[in-house]
Image (cartoon, rainbow, N blue to C red; front, top):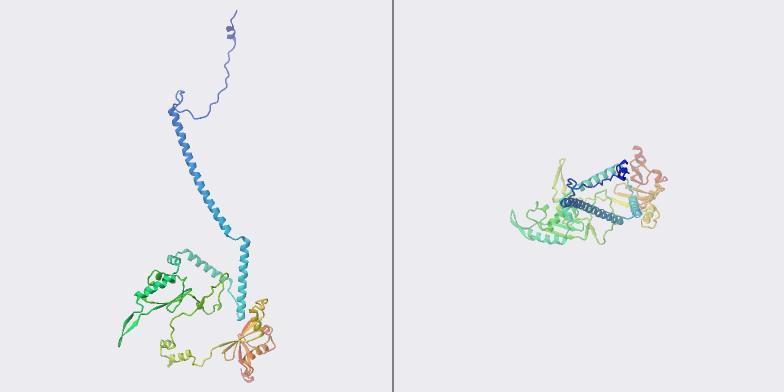
Length: 449
């Protein structure tokens, strides 16, 4: 009988099928030799390296967070600034209303100026578009140039306010140093005499100063501010040192309650300028006369030569000029006469505000008529529909009826207006014209001419 172990030997033995184990990915153990586990020192070294790398990473992230926080603060400041600017800036509708109101004010001002010019027979022509563009371009270039270059002298002076009390006090001290009231000995041919030092007159106005006999100098002028700055610092003005190296007393006049109005050149608008939204302070006087001693007629004549030889004749300049200045030559001054007419009366009522409904386009013609001798100029305002006969009646009311017969003519083109039934508009004497009067020629003289 066989044993159980012998039956087992007959069975074919197969190897056990085991599931392969997956190797976990991870850091290899440090210094593994022959399958031995890492030591404590190796583990500690690996841990310290990881901690150092993490600390470096935390430090860089903290720095990045700090930079981002700073950028966020800057953006918040910009947002606040934009919000404040938006709050201060009026809305679109309000801005449009302000511009419309300003446009209406300017249009009314232009209308008033045109009406004023029309009253004197003038018409505003203006300038062409090209000249205006050239003027604007030149002004823009000057503005850019002034902004580009920095002028240190003007910048420093403009920041300093004008202290008039200090100026007057320092002028008194400078007068004492210059010898105010002290006389000097001047030698003459017959001996010597005492002579006081010359003084420099300086007048202070509300808007500027006048030194010597002019010209007027505004406080905004850099040279004026430089001069006043020297005085406030206690020094003699540098602009006078070349003429008065040893100094000179000042004759001070305080007229700061007077506004100096500069004289305008011929052709300027004769009235006062007005600005929108600006009012002139009350209680301020105005002047355009420069104070100071003026030359008498004799002093002026003494500056001229006694006589002048021209074309072999000796001309006494002083005597002829003296007669002219004193009005002894018998010459009559030119006179402008405003003739009273119904159109002029209606125009005055409209200007006084009694007829505000009338516009600037009223059909009124302004005629400037020179008399026969050229000594008078008649200004006649008439309607376009009035005739030459009406013009003669208006002139007769002013000149009188007992005058010699005359003709009304224009010099350019040369034309005589004899038909008294023709209106001004039919003759083309609108809206203004320049005429002259001439004694009526006799038929014989007219035929000879």
